[in-house]
Image (cartoon, rainbow, N blue to C red):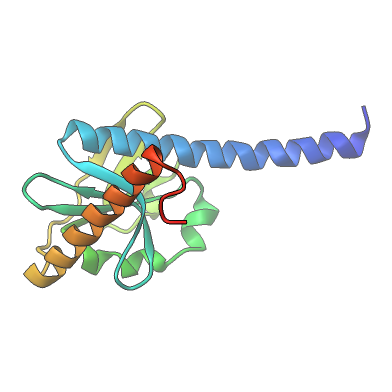
Length: 159
C-alpha cells in the first residue's frame, strides 16, 4: 500500500477517534441527564451568541451547562466556557476517563463520561439565575427542542 495513503488514513483515523471520543462523552452526559429527569439539548445557543455543548433543563426549571473536552489541547485552546456560566445554575466540564482532571478549574463541576454513562467527580457549584434570564433561557430551550422535533418529523420544515 502507498505510504502517503497510510499516513493520510492514520490522520483521518486520529481525527475520527477524537470526534468519536467527543461524541461518546456527549452521549454519556445526555444519558446521565435523562436519568436525572432533565431534558438535554446539544449545541444549545445562548443569548450571547455562544453555543454550549450540552444544556440540561430539569422539571423544576434548573438549567445546567456542560462543556465537553476530549483533549488537553481542546481545553487549553478554548476559554469561551467562561461566557456560559452566567447562563446556568451550574456549570461542569465533561471529559473522558483518560483526561487529567487536575488541570480543570476548581470552580467548575467535573463529569467523567463515555458513550454509555457519566459519573460526577465534582459537583457543579450552584448559583441561581436571575428570573428574567431563566425565563428567556427556558423559552429558548423549549423553542429549540420544538424546532428539532419538527425537523425530525419533516426535514423540510424551516426551508
